Length: 123
Ligand code: SF4
Image 1 (cartoon, rainbow, N blue to C red):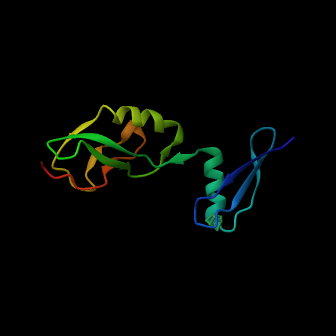
Image 2 (cartoon, rainbow, N blue to C red):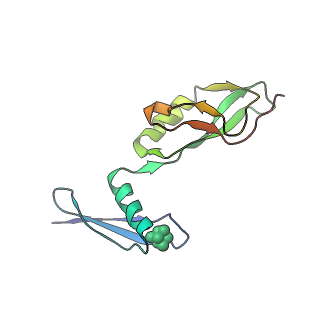
């Protein structure tokens, strides 16, 4: 018997309801509900190897602000997000920081860098 899993496409405000049908061996046999190619690709990605962009903060010294907002330069495996956040909790950087500056390269070996999303001047 085949299994069906549904996802909400986040590719645009239409929010198509995507359906992925797989056979008993776990092979995808059909994808339905997408209104464009991007949605079909998203459904397959989300079903087989879901990814997320990480957005959080790290500690920063010598600034008026205690935390620097950072995000991943590319989506990372969803399974790695919690561990990445745990590691970033121990990271401390030093002002001045420029927006786009790499704070942690190749975070957790994912190939994505954690980059600053704003300037952080000296206090
Ligand atoms: S399938 Fe295409 S049209 Fe539908 S929500 Fe996704 S990106 Fe938008």
